Image (cartoon, rainbow, N blue to C red; front, side, top):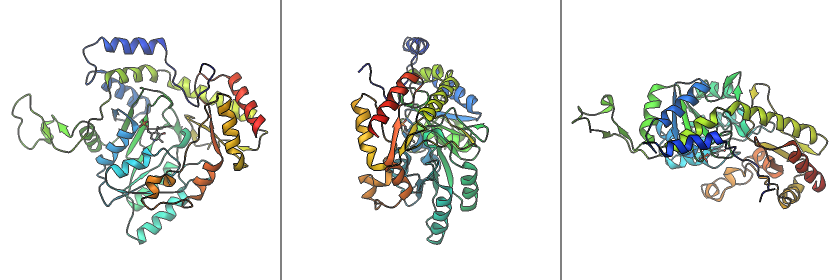
Length: 384
Ligand SMILES: *Cc1c(COP(=O)(O)O)cnc(C)c1O
């Protein structure tokens, strides 16, 4: 496996290992000082007041929906070009899930398609309660326009920024909720920085912050302001909602703090590598990732699209045969059997499907070398 090149891969340093080892020897494996320190480090980094670490981004998405009051009968809309978790969070709350087609250049949720769908939904009296734009590959959606629509049509926005920590949009850090209610990060090992498993929900809104905290941990509060009567004593707590145990461990938070110190270097390295791909792939019949000038993308992914989609499988198989762990992001969520069984079908979102048919994500991670990139591109040339 040593010469296998994955599509994404964590970078673990001696300092990371040292940090985690020390926590193992400390008094707290969970519910100690590291989680609040990690939350403070991330919230300082992006410039926001409230951040809540959880055991995954999937959990953070679920809690975000609960905090915004999503219920049975409500609608949540997201992009079909995402990981299933962006849609599943709506289903966990019993809500209906629907999709908005993507922009053919950025592969992010199309604002034109969103506006069109909102007009229809208004007529049919089924406007969404929550829209979840996904910053695909690290590039921010057109949040300014989406926020304008949210104000007009009265829906909440959860940014799924699982790919996007470390990037900026309109010169501000992604995650500061300038144009949204809640932002979600993922710290899965293939993402920009890792805590093994882990995620975070960020908000500017104090009331939402209280709710996120509550739902993350059983719906239990020790805050007298939320109790129905004066505490029986110092031991006393009350459960006031049906929450979950989505807490992050101290080990994970320590790893996150250590990783966060290198985030800007990681993103910079991803840009160097992407620029190099741009150069060495420029003569091939491919569509290369488009970067909008309002963004500095964290570049989680480098998705190429074959102009001749019928060759996608041949190229993909050839790369895999050569120990290159290419992948495809994403199989449109509405075509998954689970969502088809809920009434969605092939053909519903043609842009997402057209993109998917030709897409391959090339390896992109901090430790990748130009030499490995040359080898990857030679393999593409040999099979295209
Ligand atoms: C990775 C990912 C998630 C889920 O993240 P976990 O931390 O693995 O739960 C959600 N949405 C998107 C867009 C992702 O890429």
